Amino acid sequence: MIYTFHKCEKFKSWPRLLNHQRLTLFFLAFYLSVTQGAQAQKIVPGTFLEQIDKLTDSTTLGFYPSVENSSASFEILDLTARLSFNSAYPRGFNDGAVWKGKGVNAELHGGISGKKGRFSYQLMPVLFFSQNSDFSLVPNADSSFLFNYQFNRIDWVQRYGNGSEVFFHPGQSEVKYQNRKFVASISTQNYSYGPGTFNPILLSHQGPGIPHLRIGSEPFSIGKKVGQLEVNFLLGFLRESAYFDDSSGNDWRYLNGLFFGYKPSFLPNLKIGFGRVLYKQTRFFETEDLLSTLIILEEIDREGFNSGNDTWDQLASAFIDWRFPEVGFRAYAEFAKNDFTGQVRGTIVEPEHTRGYTIGFQKELKTKTGKAVSVIYEHINLSRNHAHLWRATPSFYTHGINLQGYTNNGQLVGAGIGSGGNSDHLWIKIDNKRDQQIAFLAQRIENNRDYFVVQIQDAGQHDIEYAFGTSFIKKLDRINLSGELSVSHNFNRYYIDKDATNIAILIGASIPLY
Image 1 (cartoon, rainbow, N blue to C red):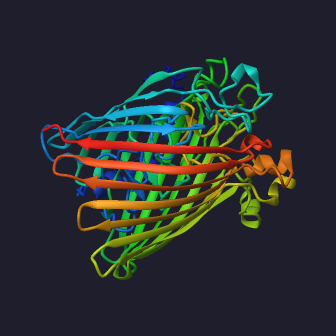
Image 2 (image 1 turned 45 degrees about the vertical axis):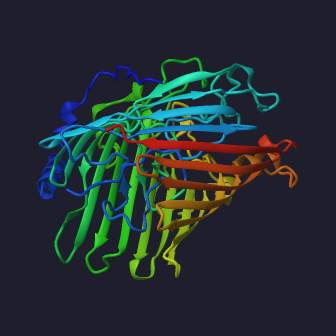
Image 3 (image 1 turned 90 degrees about the horizontal axis):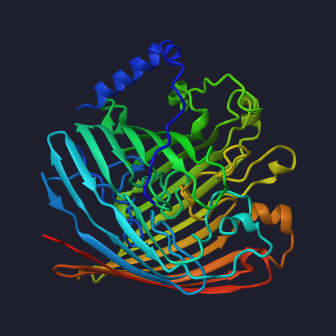
């Protein structure tokens, strides 16, 4: 699974960029304003406990990297090894490039990092193996592309081929230039955007990190009476898996993303943000597409597609994250839109068209014995509302031209529950004084309600999964141990009258090599 880049179409429109001097001045002013360092948290995707605590994190306003700033000229990163098992069907959430198929799965993360002046690097690839045992796929499926998702036909792989395989991905790797708050980097790391803990809508740890260029900032002051701002621009590429179609002309999609975060000085514990992501097939790329998160300049017809934004797919979201540290509480919400919603009037009249949303809260408690108990509840809804009855309303992460959807190499870039899904998560974590954490998780996931509403419409065939699990981390002198155990029951899996119960087990260790 090594990334290679197809050559993009010839750049044709440099003169048109010269008509946007004001945009050039804006980016110049942005650079000068932020070159005034904070540290991000290092996250190795893969377990429920090893994730960002967004109640206490102060390094960002909503754009969460996985790579930690190095403090030494050279260091060897801890080696993280994990062994997992799924008894009945593939299952894994927020585990980055790793795909946990049925049977035994093994993964190895490790590498080096360092810093020299304003430049830093982290090379932390992941090597993983999946036994990829056989399980029941969709009956009467398209035999040409049997292993792909058969509902909505996005590039969401259900099984990577017929047998065991070893995979490689650059993982949480990055080469970065940083001048005070200004950041420019080339990376394949995962980002989490917004307040969501389990299912971030625009960017998550669900699939392999995309190869990208980032130009942006850590939070910087825009005036003592105004507050702090954070701006990040991503330019990257999404890759099609080997299990979607036989056409090589649409294997790569170009992606632009622009993400804002703001914290007002008069409400220092409040964070709000806005993000926008657009992607299209690289064969349609024009130089002015670099500005697509601000303005779409495309004016020509494309192979029978209408001019304007038809060749683009868009996702956008706005969020609010309000923390109350004195009582250990935060409440958050995110409202997202999938695809374009037409003219301004239609958007105002019917803002719920193509919408998705997340609501949640986190509460931290202290016991008399010194234990810290954290409780998180999160609800996410990515299914269509009634607007699909009278106007075109694509399911979340799907598109009529970019048929692969919002995926990278067969896995989702956004929320792991997938297109048209809804879910509830309840998570309780307990920390004690002995460098030990334990957590309990309950999940309910409604798989692709959009497909059910249109194609199934049978109260006895909802595709619903319930899962209950526990996990732990134990910190010893030279090693951190981790483990998970969960049981999930999938009612009417793939909308047929057949249930499946999966037992998932994971054990892992993180070992310093110095």
